[in-house]
Length: 402
Image 1: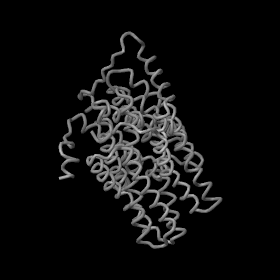
Image 2: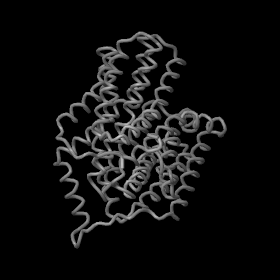
Image 3: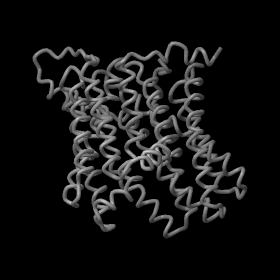
Image 4: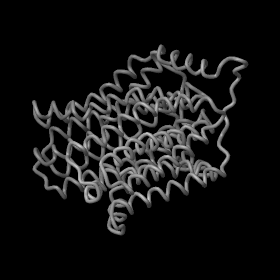
């Protein structure tokens, strides 16, 4: 009965919603091509380790600069259709260029286009979903989290199969280009949600600037932005360093560690379902966040204390299931406080990007100086930070799953 209450009537998809959700799934699956397909790229474009590092650094830097700007500008129009289609077309063209590249200069340009166009198209697609019903941001973000987790789960398998069937790097890129081109053309026929605003004769750009500045001056809003940034500490960085911990401290083999990380990723599906059930029961977002942060903190601490393989595997799943909902729930709170300005919301959320960039280096430095246990323990600041911020924030009206 409770399951029916949480999920009934929520899975119907219009062609628009199906397309926008599919963009998230495809992005998660195809974004692994530049990284997992790197050995194939080196056969086509010989590069040094320094040059490889420059590829990814430039791509990330371009995205960090262009995506926030595009997010704010996307709120100028009545819909974000042009940003979705334009981003997908540039992304498709960037993959074509990457497939044709036979010199470092060309592949460098391709990567400089790949990363920002990917993030801009994905951001505009997800913002369009928010714009369709701003007051159901929590539900939408949980759906996106579920689909994103599914994409993460399928990415290694998908890219491996494609790599085995393809003739090389060029075939991988052209396949990705064809997929994104088809999605872009299909999106042209769709009607995107319009966001009505009562702005009178005032400059819309001026209103956006005012709204952005006002949001920055709002301690509650900034608190939610920080809470939405902290989950990155329990994403890829946590999985990478906890894998090293399992190898170096528990002395588990590579195959066993990979299996445990796979189970940890899969536990996220259960975590999202439990989150929806708790919200359907009437718990507030703050209560769910606080409870899951406490569970994750206990699980992470216990993991560092145990030497049991079976208990370590169970605790990994507990941490994965309890932390999976932090990101969508916190982001939804930002969107709900900026109705009709989802792009501005994404721009605010992107303020945490520099932290995401330097986090692996910070954890690596701590692990190198103090040991891998200290490096993993440092990541416990994520649940601690969420609990602290929820504690100092003033109480708000109930905000359950719409």
